[in-house]
Length: 488
Image (cartoon, rainbow, N blue to C red; front, side, top):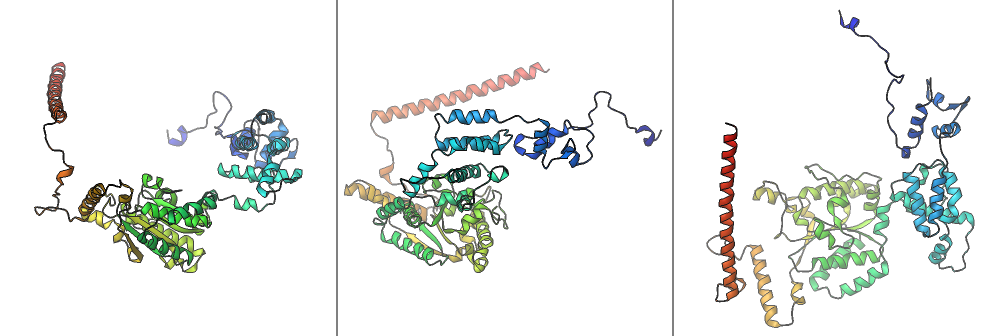
């Protein structure tokens, strides 16, 4: 028999179902209501047949479900809000309303809003009086509704949704709606300008001459829109973090945006509003020579970068040069809509300040040799020729030590010794890798009974470890012998 004779269509022996209807979450909207209708409607040949009830074609699947009586009322959600209104604040009630809309099965958002808008807007008049400094201000019902919907829309945007997804609720025609969309932008401009100004005044007075020169260079580039690239080179203790704080407080007190990032999370914690560079700029984890940051034109992050005055990055030497080149290509593409010449300028013409010390950790290259590590450094990038190098050489940590002059001298000598090790000038003549350690920081063997007891304990501990190793080896040998005899 051929294949055609063997193949035939046979009816299902049990039940009458033909296929499987996939699950849909209530939050998916029309897809959920369409699935609900497909479970009960029979003989449908088109989408209009699914939406037809008693000869009437409905405009949506949800209204079709309502006509068939499939949807329950929203009584439980209204009772939840009314019960919470006995103790919760207005802001908490609006958060509850947002949560119910986003994650629960609300049949009619419009009816729910019309039933509970009064409790959601109880504090709105007080908020506007405080905001506008108008103690006798009185709002109409429509004004209360409009301001309440603006606050709810802010919460909806934080949850990744908008009231536009619920046609029954009409948003007010307000200019505030346009400004609240970019949450990233709101976070960066939400600093208290007066507090930032006071902190800057306190910091600026204690900057040394080198720090002030670097500060003036950065401010000149930002104020005149010069788009300079500056690298602040300073070893640990020269006050780089203190300089970053002086720069950020100054610009933020003027309402300007500074994106402070670092190459690692610990360094980012020392910066006010700091984040890692990969988190802020969406730098790929797997980098190639042609990589770019995952920032799309028109996105919130792209709009934030267009309004940014300064990018500040700490611990830059430990990052691979491809990270900076990826950011350079991305900024050239994003900022070309702001400035035509941005595509021809490094970092799109934005002022970029890097800081760090090349004596410390360089980029980590798995299984890489010295040549690979040096090649991955930013000094080997095509961007390095655009950077202005500013050096910090004064160790500011020495001023925070004791007032004893001899102690200060000892600490200064130790700091100088560490610095010489980093420069490679503190090695012995026998080889580059041999370093002579000063005798004052070595523990010498003496007649102190504590040290002798310590030595005895160390010897005893070493003997116990050796005994444990011998016993463990004997145990392994015996277990292997038992296993071998078991399988014979």
